[in-house]
Image 1 (cartoon, one colour):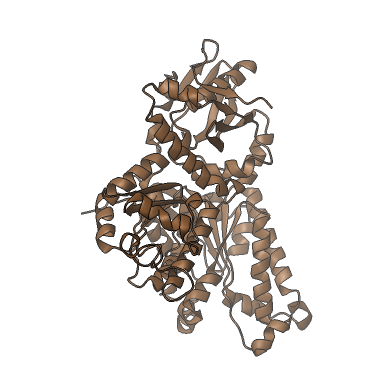
Image 2: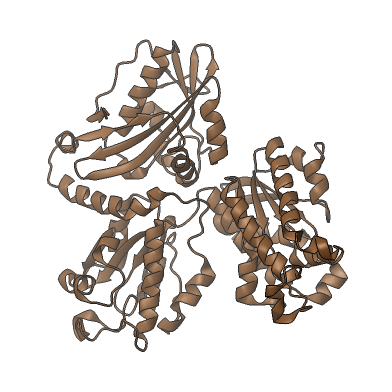
Length: 565
C-alpha cells in the first residue's frame, strides 16, 4: 500500500558542506518521514559555505530555509591546519571560532533560520602521539579546544545549535565514520554506514524544533527497575545496589533520575499490588528513584494498555510523546498493538545492556532547557491529585471555585522569555497557529511597535503550575488587533483559562481603541483540540478569519483572579 505523506509538515532545510553532501541530504529527507516531516533540502554545491552565506544574492537566501545545517569536517579542518604556520597553530581554534561567529552573525542578520552546526570529529595525525595533549600547537589539542569553544558560543546564541558528530565518532569509532577510499574517490568525508547515523541525529534536532519529542517515560518495575519480583522475592532480595547485576539496575536508575531532573515526566505502570510496589521506593536503601520523583504511580492488576491510557489522560499529552519501558516482550507487544503511537524500545534480555542500548536510541532529544523543567514532576503529581479531587465534585463550577486560582499576567521580559521560547517549541495541541519562536525573535517582538505580548501563570491551592500560556498580539489595521500567537499548556485545560485570557485580550484591545480582534486557526496534525477554539469563544467567521467586536464584548465568566502583588 502506498503511504500518504500529504499530511506531513513541510520543512525547508539548507545543507552547506565543505565536502560532498548529496547522499547526506537524501538521508535527512528520508529520516524526515520517520517523524512525519516532509523535509525539502536545498543542498548547496560542494565547498560553498562562505559564498552561500556572504553573498546576499545566493541561492540560500532565495530558498529562505527554516533551518540551516553547516557541516565542516574534521578531515578538511586538518588540511587547513596543515597550511598554517607554527605560530598560527597555537591560536588556530580561536581564529576558526571567529570565522564561525562571523558566518553565524551574517546568516542570522539576513534571514530567520535556526543553525545546526556539526562539531568536529577528532582526527589525530599522531605527530606528537599522546604528548599532543600537552602541545598547544598540535592538531588534536586545537580541535578539542575548538569543540569546547563552539559549545561556549552556543550558550550565548539561542539560534545556534550543535549536532554532536564528535560523540557519534566516540561511540562508533573513526573507521566507522570515515572511509579513506570513499573520500579519495568521491570527496565524501562520511562513510556510507555513517550517513544514516549522522542524518538521524540531525533529523532528531529538526523534529524537536517542530515540537516532536518525547516528554514522558513510563516504567515497569520487576526486572526493569530492579532485578527480581518484589511480590515473590520480597524487599530484601530484589537485585539493586553495587553488587552483581544489581549494579546494572542502579546505573539505569541514575540515568532515569537525571532525565527526571531534566524535566522528563516519570511514571510507573506495574501489574502489582500498590502497597507492595511502593515499598522499595520508601524503604530500600539502594533505590535511586524515590516516590517524590514519580509524577503518576499506577500499580494494579488491570492491563498495562488500560493503565497507560489512564496515565495519558492525567498528563493530557499525546501518546507519541511517551516512551514505555518493560522487560517483558509480551507486554511490549500488547502495548505496541493497542497504542501504536507510543515508543516501545525492544529492551535487551540482559539488563547490563539496557543503558548502552537506550543511549543509542537518543529518545529524549531536546533543543531547549530551562529551570522550569525541574519543577515538572511536582506539577504533574499535583495534577494527579486534582484529578482525584475533581471526581468527588458533582458540579464542575463548584470544583473550579474550590481551586482558588490566581494568574500573574505580565508582558514578556528577560525572566519569562526563555520559558516562553521553550513553550513555543513544545506546545503542539493548544497552539492556534503553531508559529514557533526562538529567544532572540521573542526579544525583538517584545520591543516592536504595534505588538502586545503577555505571559500567564496559574496558581491554585494545590500548587504553582508556573508559566502556562503566552499570547502575542499585533496591529494589523488601525482598528484591528491580530492574535499572532496563542499557546497554552494542556495541563491547565478545562479550568477556564481560555476565558480568562480572552477577557484580558479584549480589555487590552478596548483600552487601545481596537474594535476588532482577529483570530486565525492553522491546522496541524496535533492541534485539532483548538479547531473550534474561536467559535466556542464567540468569534464570528468573516470568510477568511475569526473576528470579535470588542465594543460589544461582555467578559466571560471564569474562576481565575488576577494575582495582586
